Length: 131
Image (cartoon, rainbow, N blue to C red; front, side):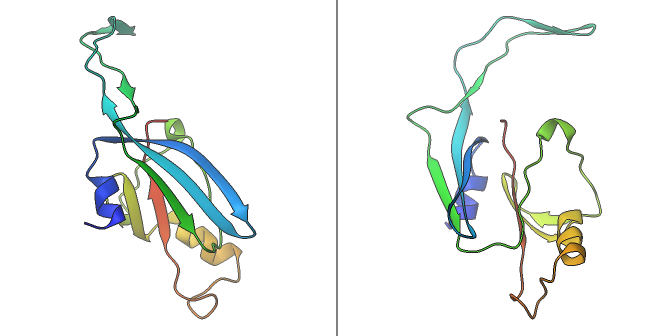
């Protein structure tokens, strides 16, 4: 099983950290997360009462992944509260997505000199996390 398949096999992931440890090198840290065995209190959202809630946690039994990209053209972070699913985008994966068509790829192609000739074929990777 490769790294992408291993991350996608988890129930949830949390986004821990992003950094540039060297010039044009990108590092992301992702933790596996699980639903806790401990139920929490009820929660009311509008007219709906939710019960038997369990927090999603990452603890010392969870895997941690450090992913390095030796170079990159662009990266972006988007708050999941504002994200929308677009049926025109194409990707494979569940928690770690590899896009073959996306608005971000269109943006990068239209706003940079990056192409299949220079620096070569590029891809859009995305992580889905609860934080």
